[in-house]
Each structure stands twice: as structure tokens, then as C-alpha cells.
Image (cartoon, one colour):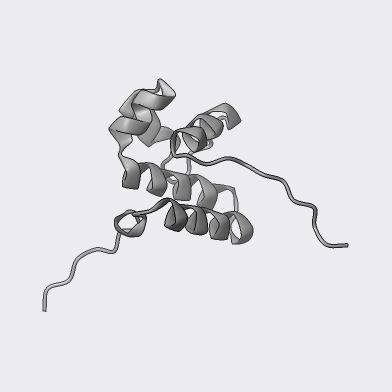
Length: 94
């Protein structure tokens, strides 16, 4: 039996799937999981495309979105905009 390594980026093939994935990670994950999830999304869309849209180099983008990275908030915002996302704040139930 031949198996292959699971890569979530292979399944992030629509804007709806990307939004669902990121919202789940934002709800349940910590800082590092959120950065890694944004990296998965960038990989699914294409690092070259995201690099061009953010004005960052591909190596810088990979480094900023890798495990253990602590990217600046401005970097996160650039990447979210490039992948077609935005941050929205909703009040928590009382």
C-alpha cells in the first residue's frame, strides 16, 4: 500500500473552503496555528502570486508563515488581503 503525506493546502480549493478553514482555526487555535493556517492558504493559492500581491519575496513569505514564526501584524494583514480575506470583529454573547 502506497500512502502520501496529507497536505491541507490540497483541499483549500475555493474561497468558501478557505474561509471555513481560517474561521475554524481563528476560533480554536492559538497564535502559531493561525500563522501556519495562513501559510497553508497562501500555499494553496500560490506563494508566487501572494508574494507579488504583498510586495514580499517568496523566501520572506515562507519564513514569515512557517512554524514558529512571529510575523508582524502588517505582514498578516497584507497576506490576508492578498488571499481575499479580511478580519471582522463580532461582539461576544453576554
